Image (cartoon, rainbow, N blue to C red; front, side):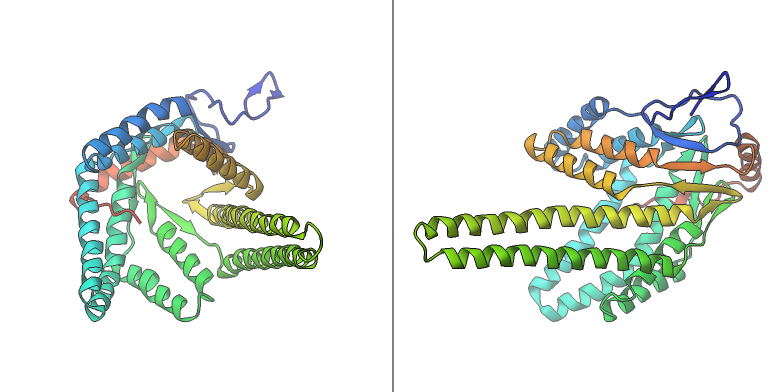
Length: 372
């Protein structure tokens, strides 16, 4: 919000504040300033060139997309930037294609060979995740300062592989614990300049989110089953009466419609519920040095945007997709707030001095991105 002659103006998520000379210490809302029309031009060119080049241009398309979304995401009067190179992304995609292609071919040759290939691929995944995280964060910047990921590969194997196997063996009862450990690993090992992020969300908070989602799922399944059972029972009772065949057909069609609607709305609703709750939980418990974040995603708003985006994409044969991405990004960005503990300009000046003093001796390690 802006202050004008002591009067507080309403917040407008579509209009960013002007660039301040000195960023104050009050909470700073995040904005996304891109538009669907602008991004559509980038998107359609990316799609056409990717098709013409048989997918090779997709690496360049990804860089253009990231740069557009990063540079139009602003907080405290400045935007982010993306510095990834298409060749590094292309190299990562070729490697991923070879790995997963080899696994697929091995499975066709022999189930035993396929199992061996699966184990080998699983053993490589944590290493690939670490490389990808280093690439993504190092090639992201804010106000000229880059982010970093400093997580160890050994810890990644324990989190991604060890806990992943334990979660699978426990029939995913350890899933919330696994999710919490992954978030703690990623956020706790990330830094901006030389300042580390900190993450303190508890395992029990993750379990509450997933138990809530499980409760909603059970209620949805029971409610849908009761409605469908009622329709089937009514159809069976009327099938022997005069005109019963038409009624039975209508009842069966209505039962199918109820199931389809429950599936679509239930899937999107559960996704929106889990994503909103987890995002809020994660970012409300993440700090950057002394600075804090707040996130206020609402599941019902996220569900509405997602459903209307899906309808727009279906009815326009996919042409609404760039507008849908911008709509979603604008809402998600506007739900974030940076709560600085002091003057951001002073913090940034100190970070630049630290980075300049330490130097950057590991740039050559950030050369691979795998999309998961």
